[in-house]
Length: 289
Image (cartoon, rainbow, N blue to C red; front, side, top):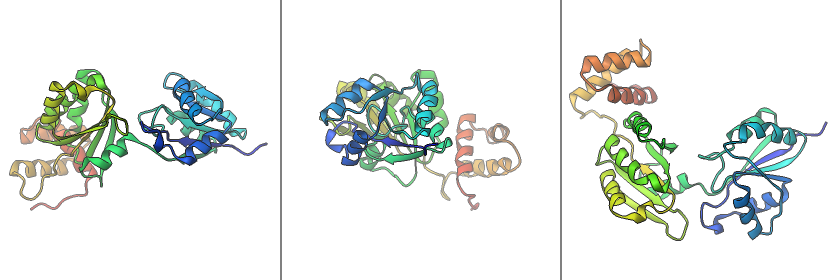
């Protein structure tokens, strides 16, 4: 029985082709097969470098069915690469099922790192990066998007979102309404490409800009939003009281029941109490002052 092969998870450029590493190109030239989100797009990219490795389509519509076939080939000793249309596979792109199945089958999974739009935007945003949460694409429908944003309004980590051109204006307006107009944010558009632009300001300022300047909606964007401030010792007494109430209830009750009781006892909106409860569960206990 042959030894298992290797699955290489290979990052490709998000725009500027000079960001494609020598290691990535040599890996794609050496493997027996490349699983690609769009074989036509990847084929054009490979042709520019004279790479003729066979391609097979792996996208959100066929990954569940195709993963078993590809893992069987890997288990038989094949060396295979996984790429997405741009950037690092699995980051809001297909590939999770294949990687998980390969790892479960004892196949070596090796990262060939490179460009990632989320990390690129974070690196230039000028917002805290010691702790951040990547949310990918928000729901496309307005009601679902606003529901998700309400659940994130109390998140204290910097938040990173991807957004499509035709939705960026609506998304900025919804984020400003959910998080507060004054929250600091950065919108990075067309990263590493010819028309790369970084917009900085409050959420209200960015939403107004998107409504007045059609260029904001040209190209893919990454939205980086500062996290919600944590109540400190000088916070209003009602915020401190909410925290004390939540800590006491969370120690004895399930999350949903604790939130319901805290909202009733403190006279607060349930959405706000729920967001604060999640933040408290993630943070170490704080001493009352």
